[in-house]
Image 1 (cartoon, protein in one colour):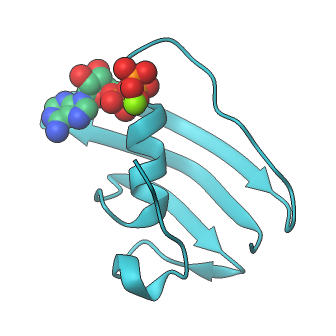
Image 2 (cartoon, protein in one colour):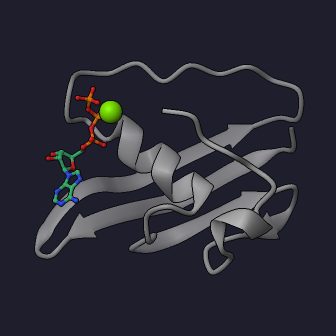
Image 3 (cartoon, helix red, strand yellow):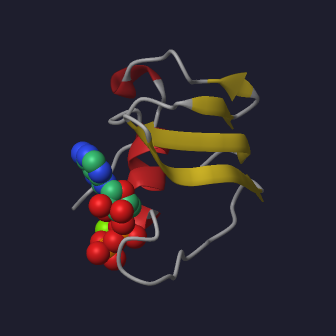
Length: 81
Ligand SMILES: Nc1ncnc2c1ncn2[C@@H]1O[C@H](COP(=O)(O)OP(=O)(O)OP(=O)(O)O)[C@@H](O)[C@H]1O
Ligand SMILES: [Mg+2]
């Protein structure tokens, strides 16, 4: 897996902001777990990284490439529910 960086990521559904100014830097080969209460935005964040959900603000990069506008299949990642 490549380095994944989230910089000032925001997500809004209409006027409702559900993720605000999220920052994360996961180095290559690292294993990371997201923990948080129901509704805090874990699935939404993973969906934005995978390209299944539009990013409202900020940038997501994978392996040094900004992927905000790339289709899921162009990102080299997958998600299993
Ligand atoms: N399609 C949507 N439209 C509007 N609001 C949404 C949508 N999807 C998620 N939300 C809202 O975004 C917030 C984050 O939801 P999300 O599903 O990412 O939380 P979660 O941390 O994965 O929760 P859980 O632990 O229950 O899976 C919640 O307030 C949720 O109601
Ligand atoms: Mg979830």
